[in-house]
Length: 491
Image 1: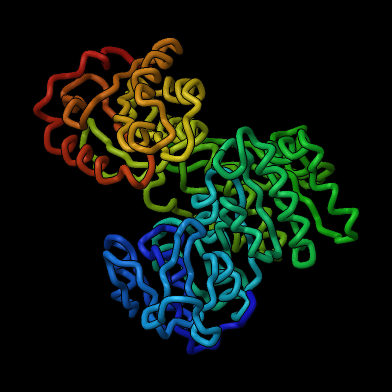
Image 2: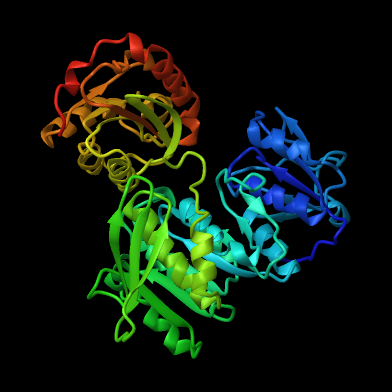
């Protein structure tokens, strides 16, 4: 950052209702800065920030004339500060412009925090929340781009030495960070508008990141799958040795493929027990429990355990922290439950996320019928429908919401008939699916049916208002509906 902000600085956050900017504004409030913000509409985050002292204007995008710094996404085109005349702005009146992770780095550096950067194509928010819980005995700070219990909009400025940061890779935002520990979860196709198709773009970006942070970095904790993906492009972590950095690399995976051997020992509906041991160990395996379902949650917990050991935490403290682990909101969040019916909501918007979600729901609800209501459409990138079909076919039935604003007819990237095409592909995979034109076409289950029902909505936050309508409809009409024919048997 070109100029260090004073403790009395006035910081403006543009797009403050967003899940990435709001926690940065939260850190600013907790740091003692005077906080202002703007966004097109209010939401629960702007209400929370106002309640904690922020001044936020909805419906306009105007920088206060006394702002010392402006924090915004790279996609936001900022207006001129209020009170400035047309033409070049006088240097003394120009606020510093910062990306959100530049500001997060500034805050954590100002308060002397050592960072654990949680990196990956998917699952960062969940892994960051789990890692924050593991580090709980150290009273950590955190910045997470999701709504997390016991934080203000996903952020907390703790009194301890560590900070857990969700390190967003989009537009290389994470290059602003200087972590002590880098946790690399996975490398999958995502953000094609920035990285291009496949995984090479992110792999190259990750090499740049690791090279630039080598002076601050002490440990890399990386999954075996991510390490293998890096190796495809000869970009493995071994290149760090050429910098004389002494960075330790901890690879975590299945027995036989990594230094740290990770395996799930037992999975109940509420708890996943996993074991960790390392190559050449003579003392056997260490067993841990996390009160979450799903292999993806257990893998993130195992990586958090190794990161905590790298940070010098004891296993007793790690276990105490693990026991408090919870997922952020919209990560397999149960929104309704009654005998015979459970309704969940999730932000799964990539095939690998939907696969992990369905696997976790099978653990939570064995032998129950699962209906997924999905809206995977993103405006910037056309979806790989074959991959989506493979993932969605794991549900007993799938409803696919309209492409709507993501259609090329509305300025998006998606083929207008993508929902119908996806149905055909799911059927070809042996699954059952239906495209709907509105939520009223979704059939609520009859609670008198033989098998209990699980419904889950999955997709972008922008579709959440539609999902809420579906949740309410399921809750109010389930007991009056006849059993849907497509649920005659389980898969």
